[in-house]
Length: 143
Image (tube, rainbow, N blue to C red; front, top):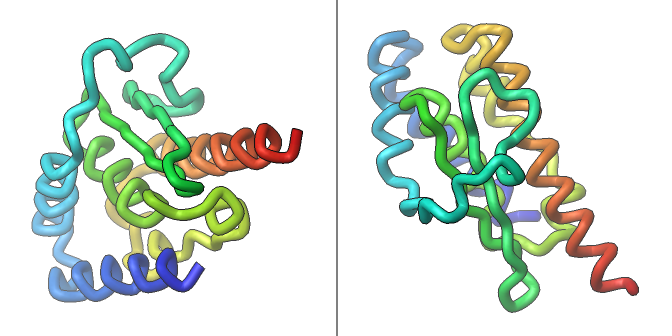
């Protein structure tokens, strides 16, 4: 869980440099989306769409060496940037760490000021989906 916390602290530090400038913040979020690994076309399926997002967000997860490996993409630049932040925070963590993590960086960077209610709801849906993947891996391991 310390790794998840330190990743969030890095994000908070990065956003503090932007000094709450809305335009620079949105540009930076879109830039971050470009850093996501390419999601293969075969994974852009209806079953991989995160429910509750206004934009299309595709997300997959695999368990590799007891760590969850997330892949995601979106059809809009800002949403792709937002999901990239979550992938950055939770990727390569154990299912247990993901399930018990508190995602606090959105409040600390004032995300509610630069994304509307719809995107905020979608962001919550992405977190929920990531935790559901982790729960599923835990349940499968306990069978």
